[in-house]
Image 1 (cartoon, rainbow, N blue to C red):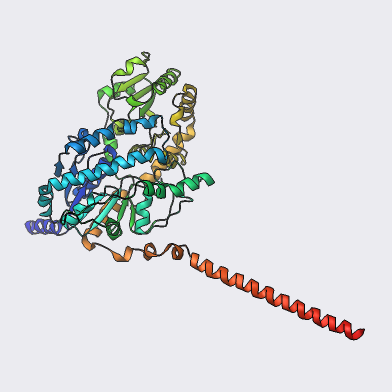
Image 2 (cartoon, rainbow, N blue to C red):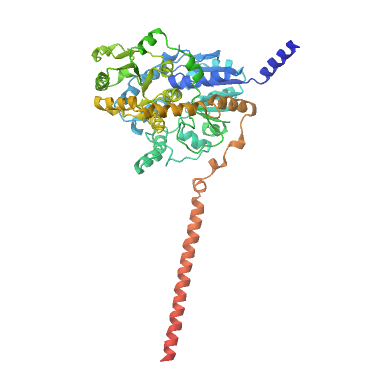
Length: 529
């Protein structure tokens, strides 16, 4: 009897398991971490997951991003692709320490990404045998980043019918527009725009024109079919056929905005507080945290590294830290040259790597000074720690405004990093004003008790998509409507014509009535005479 029950359970697990392909080129740590978490969540639920991670940036090649997902497929970068990866890691992005994150400044980076993925498409086509092996898996669904357009030749070649695109950022205006979401540029900032939900006239103008300007100057690249080389793929028609769109946004943290049923918000999926709380710091970090009662963690992420910041910024941070001798500052600094500016201050600890998650959940860490990358924003939010958010470029600007509106964090301009007095002021404000700790804990409790956890949303929607495939019923007709019809301009024009017509008619009638009255009055006066 027991054997039969075990066999039945195993059979049910086999019947209900699906084959997923998670496609994530190695070009950014946070992007890969997000997709690795998706892969592991599906694997933990008993599904067969293949994690396809062709290399772009070489330093990520030997990193282990997935844990429970066992089938990982890698592909070496070609020489040309490798050089583009080097460019991505070099001054192309580090220059944003002292440059504005405007459209004109971001355009070269977007062009680099487009070139990068086009070259990767060629590299995959040159190693088509890798896809031939994957084709034998007969995947039920594929999950991929929306702007990684090389995914579409892969989808076409493998014949995968069910698409579940994902965005490792909070949202993407262009993708939202393509799938039929309502685009409110008056109140919803573009991912790369440094605005919140309350914009001035000039900010709303910039926000509305950002996407059209990028498309005008860069446009959409052409990708060709691997099955029929030379045949361009109309991926703009493929995107709306997606069953769901997964976005790294959490409704209890992000700005509210209109979405459609197809959009699934799984923000915070990479943060598992149960696991984070179980991870304790080792003895070295334990000793560091015990030196002083107050500890501040400083980290600007893996892309925008501290070692590349201007010398004036480093000097000002050191000066500000020197004014707070009762605070231990743990600074993630990626080079060995800190002795040139450190001044041998005993309350600053430099490390090339830090156990960020373990430190954030440790009660002895009081404040997190961060670049507002979405991964760090999610981690500090769930951890309930106050934060100083110093965004450098791209979506970090919006992320900082998103979290600071909950009043458990403050936004600090990168252009003030050379001002030690302002740094000292903001550090004291967040450290010693209790409202920041209270509000940060309040947000953490709300995230912890949200009705449906992000992992559940991901799992249920991915299983649903694998079972039922494309869902035309979720495809809003509004995306096929003309601009005039969608915004009811045609109705307003008709109403305007009617109103103007009635006004003219009324004026004509009134004019004639006045004329008749005048004539009658004239005749009466004539008779009286």
